[in-house]
Structures are given as C-alpha cells and as structure tokens.
Length: 306
Ligand code: CP
Ligand code: NVA
Image 1 (cartoon, helix red, strand yellow):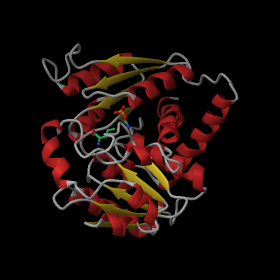
Image 2 (cartoon, protein in one colour):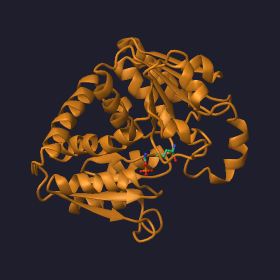
Image 3 (cartoon, protein in one colour):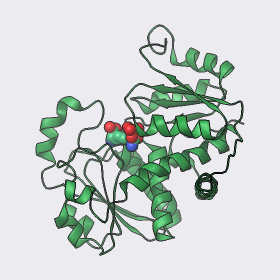
C-alpha cells in the first residue's frame, strides 16, 4: 500500500527513527561526494500554493541528487481548484508521477489529495502542520545532543503549524516541550489532545503557558517562528502588538541552559520574533536546520518513492 507523509502524528517512533537513520546515511554519502541514485527515473510533482525557498529548493535538489526529477507546479498555471477538483488532479497526476508534494492552506486539502492519489503524497506545509520541517529539526537536535528523550524544548511565539508539528514530534520522541504564547494564539485544542495521548506512551511532557520566561528557564532548545504566518499578512500589525514580550532575545538566552541551541524554521522576521544578535549569535543552529531539510527529506523520498 502507498504511504503518505501528511503529519508526524501518523508516524510511529520506529518510522521516525528509520527516517533519521537513513538521513544520516544519505548525509554522509553526500558529504563524501558519493553519487547515490535510488530514485533514478522517478518524478516528484511539487504543488506550491504558497511561496517557499527552503522546501522547494531542498526537495528539488534532493530529487536531483537521488537520480530523479522534480516538477514545480505553480497553481497559477495548473487547473487545480479552479476548473478541476483536487480529486481529479490527484488521479491524473498519479498516472504521470511517482509522488506529489503539496504546500497549501488547509490540511483537509492535503488529505483530500492523498485520499484520491495512488502515489505517495507529502505535506510541504499546511495551515495546521509542517511535518518535514519538524522531522528535520528533531534530526538536527539529535545530531547535536545525541538523544531526544527528556530534552527540554521551549517554543516561544505563535501556536501555529510549526508549533503543532512540534507537539506531535515531541510527543512521539519523549521531549519535554513548553509552548509559551499569548492567550488566543493557539495551539489548536484538537492537535494538543492528540499529542497528549501520544505523550502518555512516550513519557513526553507537553505544556502550554503564557510566560516565555517560565518556558525558557533551563531549556536545551529555544525555538521560534514568525508571528504572522503565510496567509495572515493582514493581521501582522495586530499580532506584533499581541506578541510583545514573546521575542527570543539575549534575555531569554541568558536564562536557558548555557549551551542552549537556538532554532528557527526560517524565514525570520528579524528583530520581531527574534533579535539579529540571537539569530546570528553563537547558539544559533538555523543554517544546520535548513541544511538538514535536504538530508531528511531525501530519506523521506527514498522511503516513500523508492
Ligand atoms: N522553513 C520553510 O519551510 O521555509 P520555506 O517557506 O522557505 O520553504
Ligand atoms: N509558520 C510559518 C512557517 C513558514 C515556514 C508559515 O506558515 O508561514
């Protein structure tokens, strides 16, 4: 049966560990300059209904490095959702390509595409989740710290798609995750309750709070993301006001662990959710994070399309 990657919630811990093992192997091969092409002759269609730098480039380069081909589909140029249903698009694309990546608004659209497609579908970000990002983030933290279980991660900012996938990822891997956000800015109750259920099995501790200082105290990882996500541009000014006090700055770094890792999925709004000083400072691993999108997604591609 075909397998999709729609949410980290759908993955088992051993599937996550399998992705990380393969990602480490593919990264090592790449660093040695080895050519490894298990996806020779395979094509990935990539539908982007929102802009992207990292996701688009890392998937396209990843397919190329694995011997396959990636096809960028701009919604302005294809029939999806305008004159053709998501279901018909899924059925037709399935006759041409070996996998479909989609970045879109609703999670339901990703699920509908997967439901009607006979080839694997990968979620490249929806309003609700961003699984590829958080798999790469977890892999990056594991590379730096060896173990994920028991690590203290503080997510400061909007309870958005990135925070939701962090909840799912932390719940699977046994992380102690504290999300500090202003009241009324997520996380989604449904996501939280599903993650809390998984946390019972893994021993993860998941907390949502109002106080960034409480979250950051003694943290191994300080994580943030933009306050206004793609599609919320008109709320930007209102959000900047609401998130006052939720900036990741030197003050928060100072109360975290001495060797705290600072992470951001990027793109960053510099001097809004994070200061330049911290984003470019000695604790920041944002470029390693961005690089690992490539290696982790190559592992996902080999597992789903190989
Ligand atoms: N982090 C991330 O998904 O970046 P892009 O929006 O550039 O793909
Ligand atoms: N929360 C952000 C993540 C971008 C990678 C957004 O959805 O715009």
